[in-house]
Image (cartoon, rainbow, N blue to C red):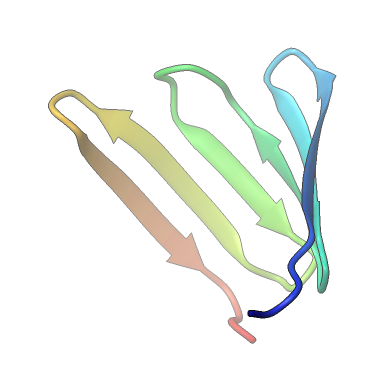
Length: 64
């Protein structure tokens, strides 16, 4: 089983700093509003929770 590391810090209401073993990211947005994530690897993701257990996500940028 691989060793993983992931930690999330709340900086301000609606702003989170996410750190894992290979990169970091900042997430803007909270609750049922759309969230925008900017990663140190160049990936930009916009996501939103929809009613009924559905979700929507759009990812742009590089993938490692």
